[in-house]
Length: 470
Image (cartoon, rainbow, N blue to C red; front, top):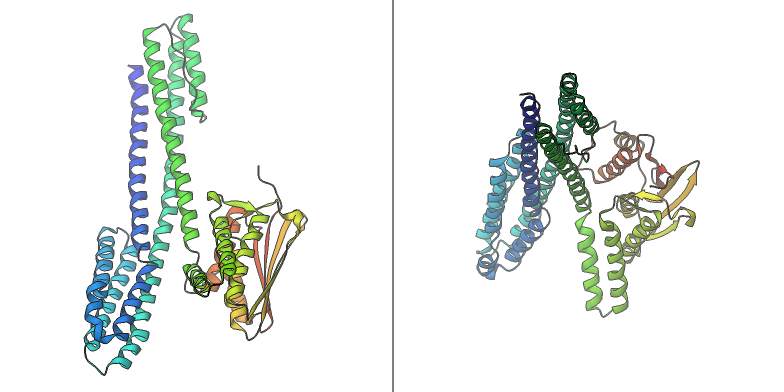
């Protein structure tokens, strides 16, 4: 009877863990599937539809033939079916609202496409259709792309909610396990007072194993005993401990997989236009017969993405991070040679220190696109590093447009977590993303700071601990 009393709560606990894992796995798969479906339209949908509509407008005489081979309305209908399916399966109201906006935008886009297709078959509408293409089609596809990115970001936050939920369930389950093990310990002690000395020793060993398991060591096992009753108890106990240990390990693996997925989503946020533009440049060089430049660009691009991936590691060396930004600047200088020059001054004694991957490159990109490109004439980006009192300090400076005082204070509040992030602001969102990742990985005392003089320069300072990881 006592054995049954002990086994019942443990069995219930195991069933509870199984149910939790099944629910978590199902929801996790659903979120990842939603992200995958939406991401399929995040990059190619806008470019493909814009291109097809441009061909229809520019070649009105052959519009019917082009529509048959790549009909924009079919592309819109396929996208509508995907997002309608996501809408029907969505549970949260926020998710439904975002998907509803995408569906409404697709309906409006379809109406504009039909108008252009109709007028394209009649002469005299070329200028009007070109204006519609710029003001309606491209604006709407850009809006849809932004709405899809917003939905992907929303689903990504759901992954974090799932992780926190499973962590809470694990803590609660461990507390329940400790209580059950304690009950078993007390029961074993009471029985040992009534049994012979020959039974007290095996019971004592079982209690010792129970204490270790309650402390989280699921590798311990109770030894087999000559007593049939104790043998059954020990065997059942060992089997349950093994199952609980396996379930806890499964939870740990799922958390690691979730972390890897978040990293991939972060890496997927790298501006795809950088890759497109670089590949366009390589194609142009190849067509021009500039083989040496093609080799240089391909090699540099390969080095850039090799560091971006870095075999899934969260941390890389300062040497690798420097090589990453150098590859990025070499590529961009080739494209913006008339407006961009740069210098990198990071002492070699800092090379072997670890740094969170993708710390400096987003800051360099921000300096180029929101500093150098917004001024007239040649601009300079300077990246430097030094070690001060147990900290590594990196600075990204540019002599670009700079920031007005109001804008500077707003961005400071944003990176300090004092103001809600505006995802439509690429400059502020990029700085916020770097600052948040640094705080989460190093602590609140580390992060970035910002200084700027309007019309003259901007400098972003990064402070991280100078500590070698074990």
